[in-house]
Image 1 (tube, helix red, strand yellow):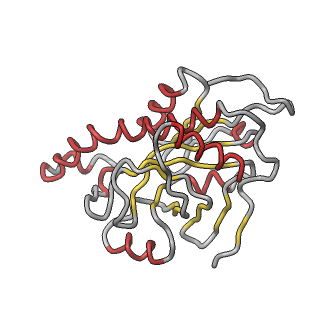
Image 2 (tube, one colour):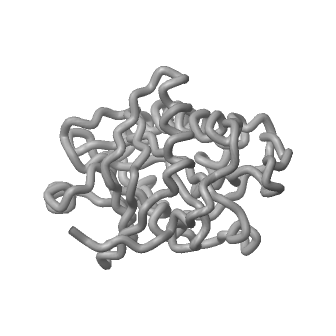
Length: 222
């Protein structure tokens, strides 16, 4: 990823990822360029990220049935389960959408939810009824930094094909019934994470500085 500054003297947006897999994908897509790992649920964010525009990339779980695995999401807004809602930076968002289309993906832009854990079962439909199309565990927290922010996510699991919340730890490895999910994720997750990372990298390489309005500005719930 380029480290050249824009015409206004600011550095390009910094790419961040949460899990080891998402970080690995971002590093590959960025050609060894600078990528920050923030940890699942925003647990190990580097302090200096707060001084730069941020593009987060990674995976998400679909909440609506019409999203298939591999679908690309570039939301205009992200929210937390406490009702806090944050608008993504308009120019970073446009860069991501243009990048996705240039790579052959038509992204969905409806709001996504940031939850403290995997959203499964009936909870998917409940959050979908409130206007969210997918859920992750980091975007809403990153949006609260108060810097220009946007996110790109690739759908991994869906209401029709769920993964167990036990995969957040190691308990699932002790349950043979869940091993089929492991095989499926081992094949799908790296591919989808790399797609999202490539979109983020292409957006960072875009021309022109990010919008000066912080992406993490608060918006009122509908």
